[in-house]
Length: 112
Image 1 (cartoon, rainbow, N blue to C red):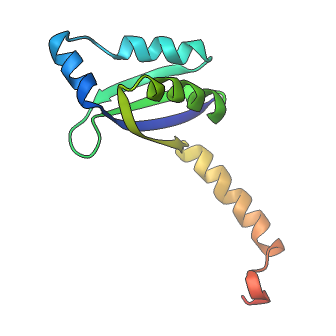
Image 2: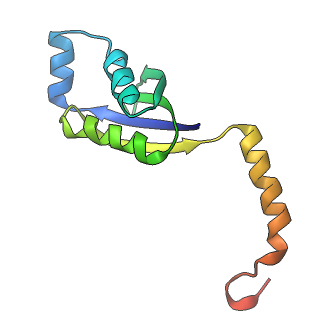
Image 3: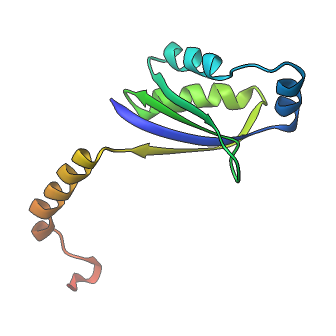
């Protein structure tokens, strides 16, 4: 399973709706993720450039992005930015693969 971190902003109408009728949006997001076979791990309301950050576990980017497209199509969120994350163990495995492969690759122009 892969980890995806998505940040975004609420639209003005979504903020108005949440003020008029406060609710825990993590339940709706968890159900949306489950509908595509993913799992919401954490949902944070944040301050600054983005209004929220969600951490999602899923089999692949296509499923997660499909669910995020549904969320975006509602008009309640905007500026969605998704990053795939990896554990330090996965990063170490990538480093080892790079170390074993680098002698097989020459830079553009043949320099190096």
